[in-house]
Amino acid sequence: GENVEQHPSTLSVQEGDSAVIKCTYSDSASNYFPWYKQELGKRPQLIIDIRSNVGEKKDQRIAVTLNKTAKHFSLHITETQPEDSAVYFCAATEPNTGNQFYFGTGTSLTVIP
Amino acid sequence: KAGVTQTPRYLIKTRGQQVTLSCSPISGHRSVSWYQQTPGQGLQFLFEYFSETQRNKGNFPGRFSGRQFSNSRSEMNVSTLELGDSALYLCASSSGHLGTGELFFGEGSRLTVL
View (cartoon, each protein chain N blue to C red):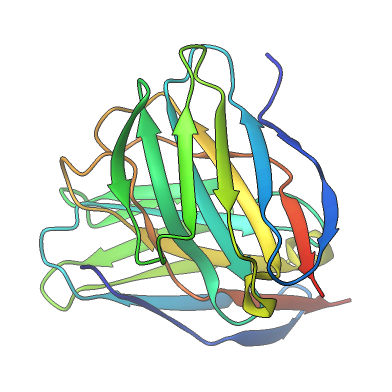
C-alpha cells in the first residue's frame, strides 16, 4: 500500500515569515493529494488539494506544489499569522480505491507573534 | 447542512471490554470512513463504507469492525479492548465516489482504555 512521510514534525516561524511542509509518497499511482489543518481540539478540515495532472495550486496565502517524478508534494504558507498555528496533515490516495486516504504523521506549526 | 456527528464524544473503558462508536454523516453523503488518531502516528485508516458495503479496510486486527446502515449512519466496534486502543477515533463522510472528494470529519470519539 501507499506510504506517506511528512517533515518536519514540528515547525516554529515568526509571524510574517513563510512556512514549508514537505511530504513524500511511495505509490506512483496516487493521484490526489489533499492537505488538512487541525486546530487544537478541533476536527481536521481541508485547506487545499492538488491532483496529479497539476503541478501547482494557490489559494491566497497557501499553495501546494507537486513533483510526480520525485513523488513529493509540499505546502507553502506565506505571510504566516498566529491563526495559522495548527497541525497540518498531508494525504494521498490512489484512483478507484474509494476513500482510503493515507495520511502523513502531521506537522505542528507554531507561529510566534 | 448539519455536519458529521459522532457519539459518544468521550468514553472510558477497561481492558477486555468492547465499545461501539456511532457516526452520522452529512445528509446525502454515502461514504463513511473511520480513522484512528494517536500522537505521533497521524491518522490511520480503519475502514470505509459506501452504500452499506465495506469498500476498503486498513491494517488493523479483526477486533476492529464496522457497519453502515441504509441511512448511511455508521458504527464501529472494538472488542477485547487493549491499552493501545486509546485514541481519538474520527469519522469522515464524503460524497466522492472514487477518492477524490473532500473528507468532512466529525469531532471524534476519544476513547481511553484503562
